[in-house]
Length: 595
View 1 (cartoon, one colour):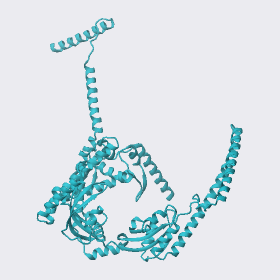
View 2 (cartoon, helix red, strand yellow):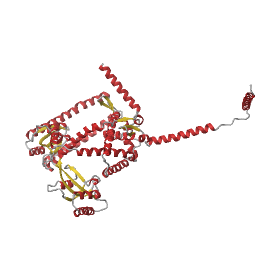
View 3 (cartoon, rainbow, N blue to C red):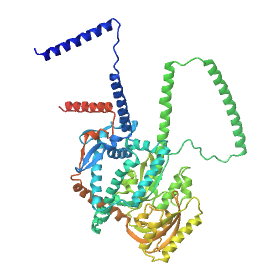
View 4 (tube, one colour):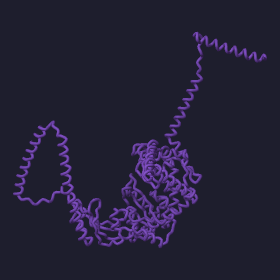
């Protein structure tokens, strides 16, 4: 053994002896061990850091950090779709379906609803997610095409978003909550107008691309006529008379005959007798109640009384009601068999009218006439009869409408050949702090500027762009094309549809409506296409665009990213597990029964 080894052994022995000595001193109550604070310091530091990190995590969760930043899907291999955007889409669809906010306890409870699907039972949440994926794919595909074609949001679109924000903020105030709270209930955590605006802008660009594309489609007259012939019921409207023959009300007293003095004296005597009898009955009843107080009828007596009431009174009432309904049907059929003209129809309606119906029938010139009704506005049985290809003017029938026998008289069927019209306008609204005369002067000054200038459509459009207060058309030079009769306020429409109106006419029209009041300076461009042809163009264009969308969708499928999808449309896991288990049990049971 070397000297070095000896020294190491001696040192180790000395250290062991020292430790033994310290232990003996501790046992004897001598020198105490020094407390080490280093472990506690480390523990406190770890706890503080954990608290800070936990607080940050809570803030991130409550503030929707993950919803805004977690990628829930990839579209076209390049577009990263946030969980927030997915929630916005499903939130909109859910709200439209149930008129309810998806991201509330009530909304969350509906996500486990089930209904029959093409491949078995479907859960509402799965259905919403499936629709959301297709919508997002299409929005990204069309917004990419909009960008490629140089389509941008104009001032009208920006103004729309601004007004939308104002309306939502006002709705939040009415609901006594902050705008962010309202957004989070509608579209989930992290939703506010700032975070949703880029998503809304992308949707608007997609819509602009579709609108501009479909407007540019052209079709021949032969294509329009073929579309009309193939779907006449969707384009035509019908005019007809309708009158409901209500059953007599037994509670309504009949007209009293003229009374003589003798009748009056006799009636007074009868009234006195009735009063006396009533008083006697009341006294007897009081005595009976007093004597019977504290005594309850037996169960058998109660059941017997109840049975008598159920078996006697309602059946008598039902018999009476059925008689009255049968009488009303007979009257309606007699009217239908007798009426030979529109004048006959009104006379019969007055003859059979109830007290509630008569004032209207007498006040209005032709209150039973329904003009230009489209098929979708009518009940199925009414629509089937009125839109029958064999139907002729003067045909009558009796149908049960909402439980009341009703007489129908067919007048005519035709398509809407009325022309639409095109115009530009400048709107100058009344303000709360000025007289209407001041508004008129402001509008007249603008009209004078136009009349002193070139007096062209382009010059009018320039004035509308700079001065009009109609945000819906300001950016487009005040232009409204192919407007169908009935869409605009009456004063504006009457001016445009005046038979003497010529292209290039300009006028000043005062309008007062529930939404605004002020003056329209109108430039009449001319008549547009017939109403039916405009409808046909929309349908044909949408069909063609849908065919093109089949190619556009290629490569734009939504690929789920599970790390982000868990923040999309969150649900109650226990409820969902129970629903899935019940579906599985039902499927297993069905399989066994088939075997």
